[in-house]
Image (cartoon, rainbow, N blue to C red; front, side):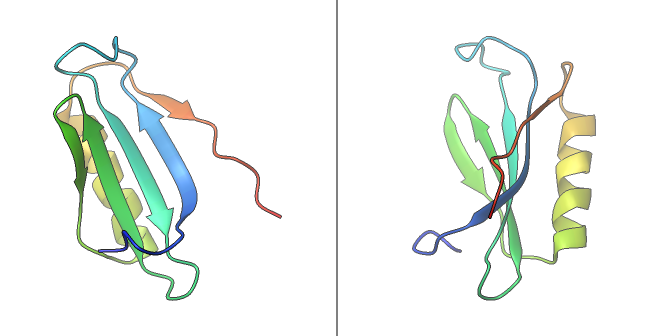
Length: 83
């Protein structure tokens, strides 16, 4: 995992539910700038669930699969601009 490294946020979504709702979810795709591998993190009220490192294409595919499988209307969270 990449816990000790600075990750670049590529994209994030949330399922437009109250944060206290047990079905509230947020999905983040981050890239390790030094190695190019990415991670997908799913956050729920129960806590974060990071996935194993993978390619950027696989990370976006996994994030899409998670969003399709979960209930709710998904909305993109704007990622901060990078210099």
